[in-house]
Length: 449
Length: 184
Image (cartoon, rainbow over all chains, first blue to last red; front, side, top):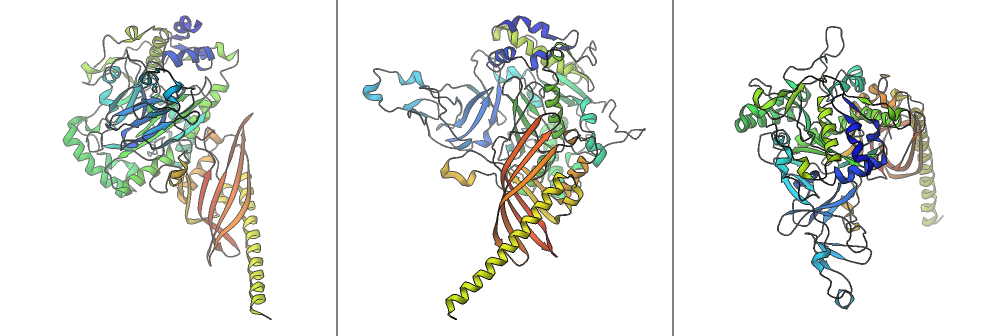
């Protein structure tokens, strides 16, 4: 475990640098599987994927396969997909409905709580074996506005404490557009693809300065930004990027969560009036109405719409959750979940789906270029010479963050949008995980909420 | 001449017509592959009808008793691609900017089309199934291989065809390349 002692040197947040080793070193990777993925709360799915008892989807926690299912008592269970007998997978499918998971090797069978229900030759074959001790490993599970989170660490804080105040942001896109509780659902079909970069590369949010460079082809060819919104041109004809909207900030938490937040105002535009939907009347009219309902429920906070990156590997892009599953130091499997309002008319769901498919994911006109950069920066950083050069996270270093609760009545630490402070918060927290022996050391004493 | 031999003669004529049609369609597919691989994207777009649909579902591992859920369903579920001509045009515009980094410089791509079979021959449209192998090589040594099936609906247009509908069934569940910058 050499890497533990080195982690403070690997991440120098006072100097604003990060060693490239943490993006390519096998030893560090092995350690973060234990210390980061073994202890944090991880997003594994959404209740709309498993509406009935027995429904299941297979998901991942770190490198490992887990079964996310609903037991007979309607409780959500997250079970390690590895037979206690000889280790084989007990679920060979991505999704389905089953009351029993039977291993295809020797037939050990488990119910949807993970309990060992039956095994061939039990009578007479296993003297006095306590079946209760040989169930599938079950994770701790919490459901937040329909989203399902799990951790292997029973000493971890509750999920709400883990969020440390970020729950007001996490809920914004999990609510219905009309503000109703758990009003979102996942469209059928989790988008899964693999790319050659370390899992951390896409994680910290927001990286606003990359937008006009990485996604320049969208502005040049189509006159739109990375979300498909028309580009506002500045005085010299270029995109009006500069310092962004003055009410939009990078927001981070000591817990390692990072995001971009636009502080709500009374005169915020109705979401249905966005230029994105002006040629799609069915969406425009639906959103206009739903947004008025949202205002009744949430008041001034109605316009708050944030895709928070919850530490370690969850993030948002529009109304899309994307999870960066580690696949070795130089590879990541990204899974994305596309959300729509559960009760929206089918034409609205269709139009939003087509929008997502066009811009996001591996075929999306926006994300294709991100993947190109993430892959190439990985390949160009793993050599013995490049590896010794630190990466620069110094934008607005030494610019103290603004205390959100006392300044804006919103949780988190605020810095201007064009800043690396969110990246620094992410890597600072990552180093803490890598060094800490237990959750006692990781607990945040003074949450910013 | 007996009735039986008359039928056999007609069958021969029909078989000849189908053979000829299949050869015409194969030739159409080979020309299309050349347009893509020679990066003549605007000419490629011209092969599509104005109302064309270009759809590529995702594939999943499901029980053999639930094969109807293997592919995500059209219109309702997520897919890799669900495009019309207007959005295909936008993709081509993006590639041609010279700053679409995922295709700058251009990848080297070869489309191989094979196993061409006529599924349904109508007066104005023909449904055709085939296999594809698409090889992409880019930058110094990056390689991707896409293999799968295609079901095309071709609309007769004078002496040739235009593509009215393309269904693409990639033989992968987790997509193993970093992105789709190519057309199928």
